[in-house]
Length: 181
Image (tube, rainbow, N blue to C red; front, side, top):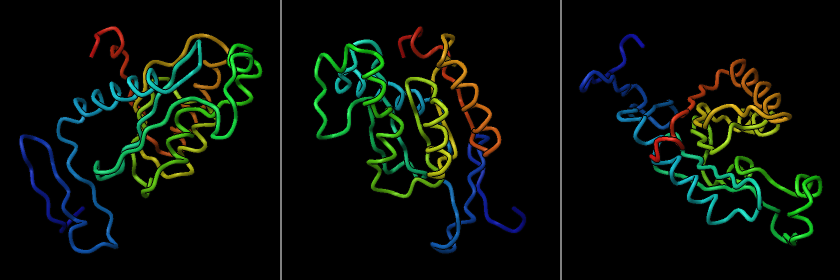
């Protein structure tokens, strides 16, 4: 932006235009962003393993505020007050009817402004989660590879189209699970 102050450090430009007042939009530097994305992904995997009771697919999400000072965790599971019985969890069709996805769980529990936030998820978001992510003003999604099995692949590809149209950046960490990061 012409006339706005900026600093260049080790090749990364830091936009300081928002420091003039609270009404202006600003972003903190994205130095070592890949390292942070991987840390948040590891946290999402940990949270999924600790909290999700889904016997077949444990999904975690970390919603990180635009300033990287706020974050909220989510996992796939039943809403509070609904019993996650073995019968419900082990009957796939019933389980899907009851389950809130990890991304939606994180968005629902955010106590901070989600505009400009980053959503990190252990699976690629479906089209329903994509709509919620876009509606909440999330600007960046970090996730693992697009699923190859149906119906999840079609849902993820539709989500890709939605993200592209809405201007949401998508970063795939393809090697995350195989590299053990």
